[in-house]
Image 1 (spheres, one colour):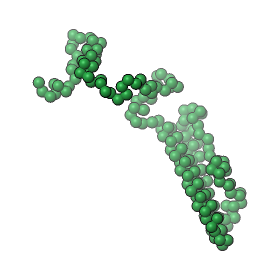
Image 2 (image 1 turned 90 degrees about the vertical axis):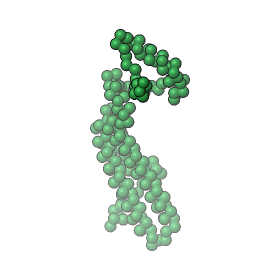
Image 3 (image 1 turned 135 degrees about the vertical axis):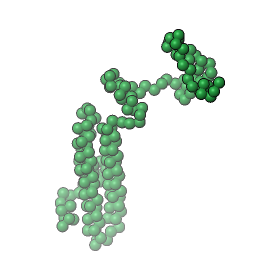
Image 4 (image 1 turned 45 degrees about the vertical axis):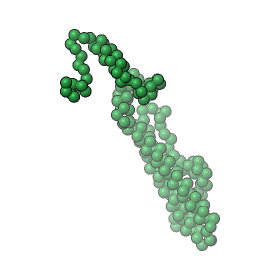
Length: 176
């Protein structure tokens, strides 16, 4: 008998029904111990089914998930969340820099520090505008309004991060 014969699956004999052949194959595998010590042994199988998805779409959903892919709008949502977090973290770092420099600054250094801080805030507000554009596009793709994301408002972001909102005329004053 060759290695090929040992390693290849047994073929169903023509006279045997599929049910009987499958049952016999499973029983033989159990006797050989093929099912012993499998990962998750004794635990229920996870239910990956999406209860909100229509039954006729479940197979397509399973194929996409099992292949390691996601729907485009899911990837977009993750990218938006990543960009929001990155913008917030950058603003917090810039605020820490500003607070430290402001405390140690001499009077003549304050205008340069304020100008740099204003540039950091402007960059944050530009990032927010880019993120809002991504959010608008995402909201058009998302299959339900329940999945929509809210646009960011810079003044609300400053509040969320406990950063004093700039005076409305600060940017104009520093830009001159």
